[in-house]
Amino acid sequence: MAESLGHVGARFLVSATGIVETCDVGMVLQIWRITSDAPVREFNVEPFNCGINEGWGPSGVVWRSRDSISFLRNTVPRDSTRWRSKDWDTTRVALVHRAEGWVMEPKP
Image 1 (cartoon, rainbow, N blue to C red):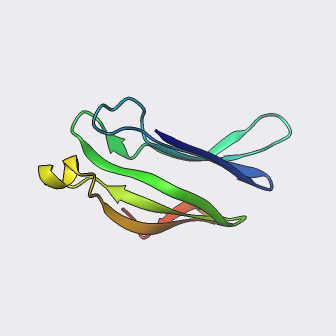
Image 2: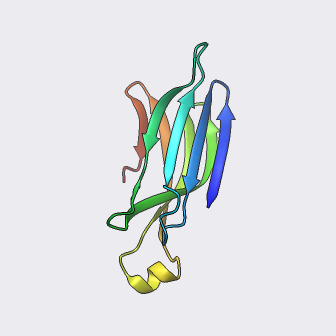
């Protein structure tokens, strides 16, 4: 399992990549904003569905600026040989804070 917790100013992010074969820990990517009362979750995605072994997991999550992060979206291949060797399809993705909220570019 890989986990990361990072912060920039008034926000912090949490990401976790579980072991897909056993689904022991869910995959998650969250962004939280610190307020005077309590943290407020601004973004949440649990991109992997253990029930059907489909989806993706984040890795290499880093802040690019106070309003954007970058990460690798690791998509589970349907080919069982690639699955067993952990040869996932990987795409560099940005998560950017805009007026309408957090937007993933490119979209999954």
